[in-house]
Image (cartoon, rainbow, N blue to C red; front, top):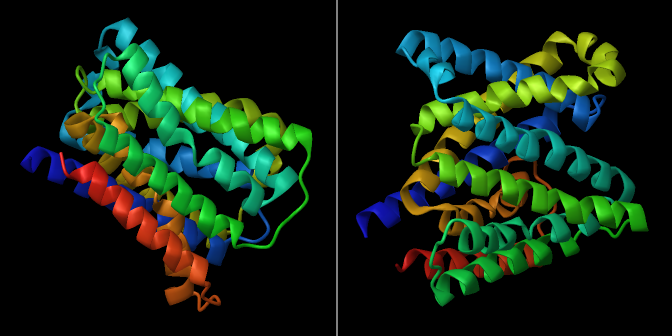
Length: 288
């Protein structure tokens, strides 16, 4: 039971880290494209992880069996390159209010893959809790201004959560063989390598990032891609992806609350309705 509580607490902490990163980016970045900003963040995060590895004697992670490194590379591409690419393009085509309700289904996909491929037994109340969390996100985001939609945008939004869930499932498998810090870091390094395929198109934008934008992105990288990812990987290693994924998925709701508290955005009753559902979902997931 103590392991379950710690795992849920770590997942909640990762959600808060991701939400804080989102607020930081929302405040400090207006000019950059999401993909250009993501490239810079991944480069910063991978560099800092390599520094952490050097200082803590964890560079030996790159001497792991090739099979494990290949799986870590695949997980990183599905999570930070493929999934995010489709997510950002769906946002561009359909807007937040139509995209997030679709992409927020990734915890349900993660539960399905864990059952099918990892042989996990998932209790009914965990599934119900995950559904409540997804519904909470949908309620909050549906309260935002409706924007235009198109068929290709829907396809992009549908692919993104499947890609993320595949990344999480592979990561879940790897937590049994690779320590959390090493796994979080090596995935980030591999993600930075993979996202480099976008440099021909976004290289000039990345090179022209101002000092202020760079500082914002460094902060976002530390909060979201280093601290947030480490906490999430650690949570998955303790309680598995069927529990960690839906709990951490409440980060959009936390971001909305932080926007109201810190950015003085106009509060919406749906935010608090979604928060209640999310809390109920987390409680259900946490009762063991």
